[in-house]
Image (cartoon, rainbow, N blue to C red):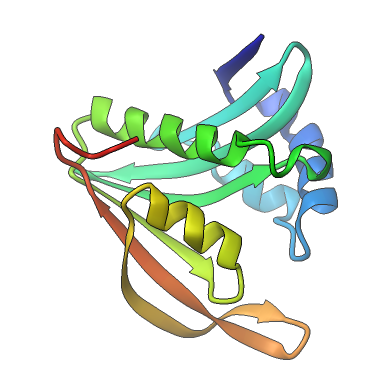
Length: 152
């Protein structure tokens, strides 16, 4: 059975390990720990005891910023990223938020496609925002306006 649970501080080591395997430029343990604050919405997607993925987002007033969605390397391509995104959108709606913001690497076309399919629209570009092998790359800033008709 698949379930969503709020991230517990004791899980950070598991998330750091999953992050290092699943992404080319992983978050540090300190960054994960800095997001364990009351205004964050951080969830783990599990199947039994196995962590399939997670997201970290922060609410400020009526906006949410999605900082990361990560799916375990051996679980990618199975729709878990979409499930995590839908859960985050529903949490934002339940909290009375009106919009969601995120930044995504310009080279991460699968993520951009996922966000587009959920209704996110490009809102701008942050030049040289992310580090990469060539030095840096742009971030595409995307926005989702939350209305009663927002598809999930």
